[in-house]
Image (cartoon, rainbow, N blue to C red):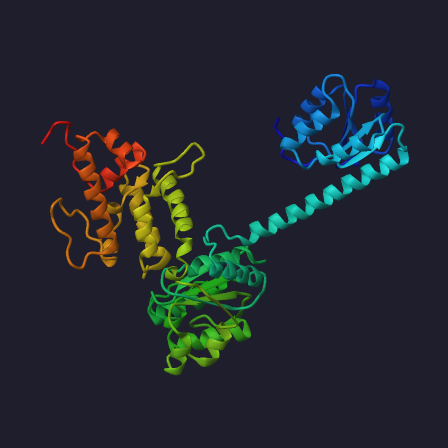
Length: 483
């Protein structure tokens, strides 16, 4: 039995009710009563038909007779509750047994009425039940909508620090405040800025990113504030600046600490007066722009060194969002890997299941290397590792040797050590464990005359597991009888 996926929609009625009863006069009487009260009513003359209708239509409530010839009401109730715990069910019977009522309630009935019932009371209880269920449904969907709104699907993380950060982002997104995002390179500052914009009242307007450190001061000022024709030698026509383009929207300054002194003064004017003067012009232009800035530098220290204006710093730092480095939230690495594998597998058309989800994964020891790495490049470095794995992987399980050499060397791992070559004195724990595992498997294979099936049985591991280890440890398999 399948359950309809949507709640009954009843724009023109109070709700849809199913009556399941083998007595035609009872069915017709309830249909007349409930129809006159504004309900849509469907009828089923036995338990089997009732189950079929419940499986194909979403009802607000069902009235179920206890005694029926093909299936009893108890049997129908029990079958329904295996798959559907939400649809309210009222039991009706000519046998006003307390024991039957208790059993029905234990099986999941919501209420119990004995024939002959009080029509007024029945209608009141049906209305109360349907209204209560709809309220619960609306509250559930409202909460789900809020969760979806503030989950920011491109910002991956369930660690305590990321949960707090996402909660803060959700709170500040709807405000007009200037925001300063701080964090190391590669932590995802622009992603957070985009999430703030996308979840703000400005979402329908422009989001304009500016890399403050990539342009020389003169060009940056022209880019930000625009210029009029003839403002300088190459200004053959007037041009809007980013602030004017971003009017009513958001402008994002990456590496705000690299702004020169003159640009800092003009930035301060935009924040304070909400206006600016294009290069070569005399009249100011009013704008309504939200400023989100980001930096991997210590702006407070730059202020002390006289390299950044103190008044601009305090204007920018109204709300500070500090992104944690990846080394401080390593529990998020598996989630991030899954996210990047999904993206790059789709982009490359590789390792996808029937739903378009990635089946690629790192082998256990490769994942352990990722978790132990210090990640100086943060999430951006991990993304590059995942993209490389998608391109180079020959199967759904990504082994250690596919990881970049620089990452392996940073963790003291040297691969491709030939058999018989002793470990160096400074061998890492990873190399020591691998070397021990290689020798044990090699010895067991020799003892079993190179039968992988027998070796797997003697080591008490599945044959597939042994084959994976043989491949990962680069053990050369000999044919039976070979010396």
